[in-house]
Length: 148
Length: 67
Image 1 (spheres, chains in turn orange, cyan):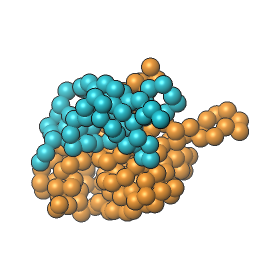
Image 2 (cartoon, rainbow over the protein chains, first blue to last red):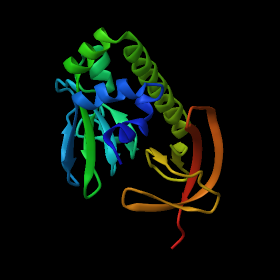
Image 3 (cartoon, one colour):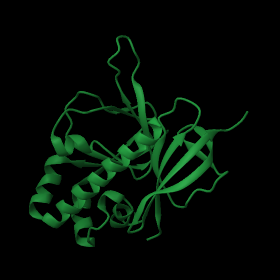
Image 4 (cartoon, rainbow over the protein chains, first blue to last red):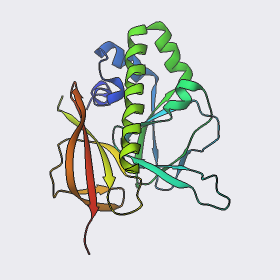
């Protein structure tokens, strides 16, 4: 599959033109993690957004109760994004993310390169930000369903 | 490009955070689904929000496979 076709299959980029997908492709890195590898740590600074291309990651948060273990919040598989909060609000990582499959392949987008792209192409910026909002909304719906 | 199904999976009857992932088909009731290292059975599947482009948004409840 061509890189642009790979990006087209990611919901975050739904609505972008082929030229815009090529621009995203130019700032998009790839990395592979093994089961147990920590990708982000709760409370640490972060400046990258991640897209799961293959495999699974587990999202955990530390409980406020003393001596308690981190609690799993959700597992994310193919096509899902994480790290988007730090991309949008510049705050610290809200959770720890760990690879849980043998070979977890991620697309990685640097915040500065992404915001620079948005500044130069407002249509691209609007579409991706709208899709990030839709993804956060979907995650909230998921949490509501888990909590029922 | 083929349709993509974004699915919110919730596991019934036990402590489990569930999962969100994309699939290349709409799961059917009774189908087996693997989340990480564990396998479950689909109990129910519903449309969660309207389709957008090639993306369909589903919610599925799962149960553990009986030993």
